[in-house]
Image (cartoon, rainbow, N blue to C red; front, side, top):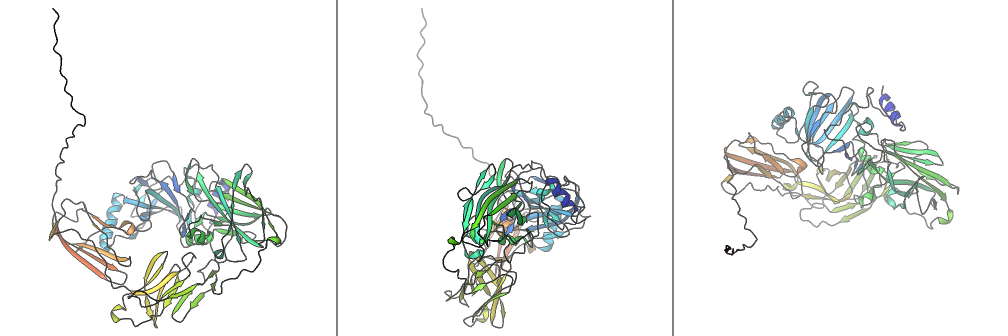
Length: 602
């Protein structure tokens, strides 16, 4: 029963069948409903390319509005509710009786019963961010049950509903476009650009050769160079492509692409199911360095040496083409969307030894290679890369710089820069260059700078200061002795908040990371929302009755520096003063009319 459903579903749509490990009964094509009441339109689809991941669901438009009713896409029960300030925001997962689950994210308030329960648990746990699991008897649902209001919470950049379909057992995300939602798409993908790589060296040590594409009645072609002549004997290709639904709209991602050599299929990638543990492989699927420096997303039609992504399927090769003769070879690339609409690119390639460039490529003297553990070791610096960390060979560029900060306890070390992707965290160990004051020993952080900044609390072992990071860059250990900052509630001994509707705090830290923020009202924890991890906001409710109160705010940074502030405030019923009526002065000048006396005729 493992593959039956997707076999039938893909056969109905006429797709190539790609095996999936989805343990589910056969599901009717109309099993799931549109979770909104308005016509379904997408701003993003499954598999769309995003920074460090594939998009794992559908972004459904809410007409740029919040608080549209969101409904259960099928019968089941609420299995999980969570609040993640930087990603999903407020979200719900529903388990369905067929072995699938659905996820709804970036929500505002949940339905009344669920909202009340979540609030109680937040006060019980004394935390705004929570994740709660339920049994099937706690919150059962029918198809179409109201579950929440749409919103813009978490990492959302604008109002919409993020929607996912999940294989409950494996936790894989399935492409919702395969489930026959009420969407129309008769438009094939658009092919924009082709890139060719020299595969006798690393993807990351070159700039590809680009070819513009033109759409014709017989498919896409390379208009100025239908026959590519090259002095390279090993090449691979990548494609820039987008897809649109019927009627236009957003630029969405493609569903699949297949490479043919002399009419023989070589390799294909298909975005029909992805696990969150696998989604970072998107960084090997694209030309990462080109994207890092502001270029377009190029999707490789070859599988890099360290890429273990399941989206690829090697048929006759890994996508690298060996040009061992001077014969003209014919290549085709089929690009499809999830509805089977197809665009095809056709071109030819020929090896020409007269085009071989003089000289020999010199690989870096010091380099990191994929599929093995790499170690860069100096007298006072060590970096370890696990075996699954790299997708292709990269240089190991190393520089040591003298510390410039009085709070630094190590030199600054640069290894490469963040333009080289890492699949797993690297471990960095540094020896201090001076004796560490006793009062600093529990205040040490390692800071990575480059593109952005990341800090980690260090571990001290055998004279080495150690931390782990997800990017290359500049590394240095410094003492963080500065406490976080908390803005003032107001002025005066007893602040009058009668006219206020809410309290807002924006705690900050000298290294940009407040690890914990807590507010109490009369010594009792008070729930402040913290959407997108920016402001902490409390809207006055029954937890703060009228009267005089004591409010205490506490901020703690990564190494335990603490700031605490206390205020007294009063709050009483407040009626805003009536607005003064503004009498508008007429801009027209008054004119005086003198009536002539009427003379009666005799």
